[in-house]
Length: 132
Image (cartoon, rainbow, N blue to C red; front, side, top):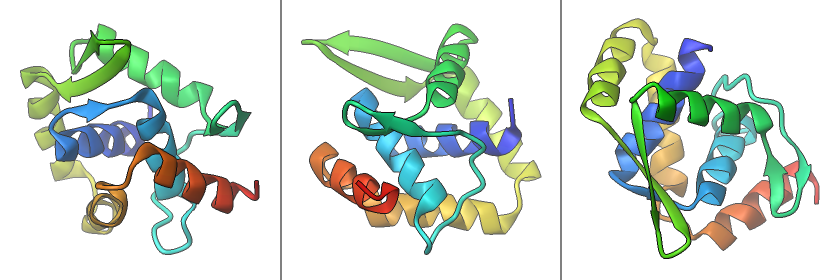
């Protein structure tokens, strides 16, 4: 588990407050990693999948963070949503002390640029970057 990966995920989820849709997280992480204006150092490998780029590594890390009590996953009307637990919020603050300002700015830029986009807009941008 890379600290940059954990920091990036926790920061993005924290920025949303409550992140809805698994696909949204997959797409915004892919964009944050691969958009030439951002290039956040996520270590996840992505493959072509049903709805564009998908990372099994990202899914596994999310599962680990959920089981570890850092992220709470809810299922409401067939939609998964995520928010940080108190433990996750505290851990994010600790990681922020270790992560360099440049990486923090890249996550903030990712959020400011793509945070309010719909899942379909994120999918379109991710597919464009992926070359689909």
